[in-house]
Image (cartoon, rainbow, N blue to C red; front, side, top):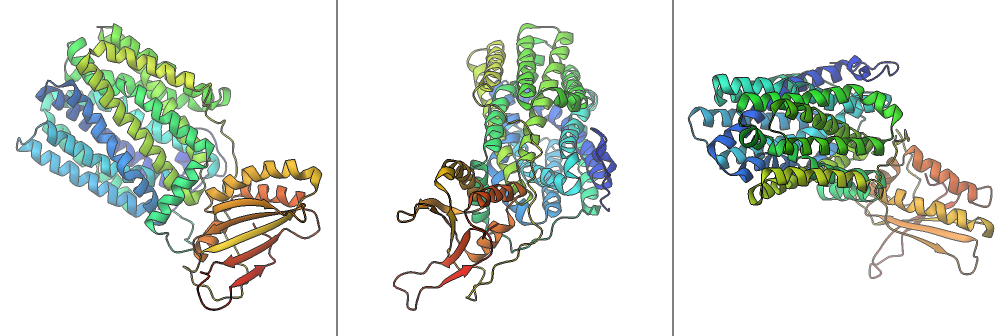
Length: 547
């Protein structure tokens, strides 16, 4: 399929004008419907074969834990290799897992540990598929439609959430778990076929793929130096830790507090999905009126209202209304956090930043599922729900000290071409380490402004791969300042330059403005050599301005 992009954003449904996005999105709805039917069957089956509250809650933990364990590796693979092929691989794993689980249910070989094992295995497929799909969204749609596309992805899943759980409950009650697992298996065919048939343009690789450990290290370094992404991850971890009690403990609420069965469980999950759908449809209007931090606080308050209501009611109707609030808070919180990570990530590292985000937020979901299950087991279901209420309100209060950065349409595009400087040696791709020195001449009255820019420069250079960055001042000529950093190899130096975003170039231009003289700051490139090695030092010079 060819990518067709609309000329201009027309609102929250604009990404659906793109043929490829629409096809994969719709296939995802079918797969999501099967997943929700399976989730209902899996959770309820666990609740019926074991009296342990902890084992029921651990179904959610087993599904989310692989994202923490594998996502950082998946992110490096997504950024280095064909994202479409990664999606096909992940989808195939999920399909094989579904087939195997269906066969085991059919022959009656099922117990709590088998349920947790296959939940974990399915989570492994999700750990690879989700970062590959989220990273591909920016390749498929225009950047101006990116926020709408990310929200639609969340809304799409929550649309089927409003139907899938009720349908799953009816299927489970009427036909048994085997039928539910068969439908789950069939649901994997649609995304496999669509992704296999789809094609979308991806920027050609300019350099060979990075080594896996280097790619992981670069992704962690970029994330650790991005305050926007770090804040989104921290708040997402806490939001998931507090809010997952809604989904993890709902089977117990239905079984023990409401004294209902599988159909009621499905209907209540449908209420959660309906609230999520309504919030998703109204999210564009809400984001125009409220800041990202205000929306996250609102999401936390909605989840807290849900859990406190569930702890106090014994009526299914009240529980359904509470779950609508919980679903609304769920989609507003997660879509806003995901958009923040997408906006702050250049294309070269998007898979890794999304993977780290998923890894740590999934850890919060898994830890929360275990925590609320343990509290229920040790104290009571009501106490666990009320403790979750307090935790969600605490996440909202943390926003006063660790606020989500207001989303800005900053340009994180990278250059399509970089002309390597002329050098005096025939370097190989793995030659190195490469030392870079940039000399500035700064007037005394401009030093304070220069140092302020250099604080930003240090983070920017580090994000792009610079190592051992330092700034020195000449003691003989105090107007001379030297920025020094290293890259492990010549290829890494070229990669460093390809990663320079428009924002990085604007920062460089501001530093050039403070530089005295008509010429650009002097750039000296060197290759390090052991002092014991024979031959004279290899030093070469580039008169090109550093960009």
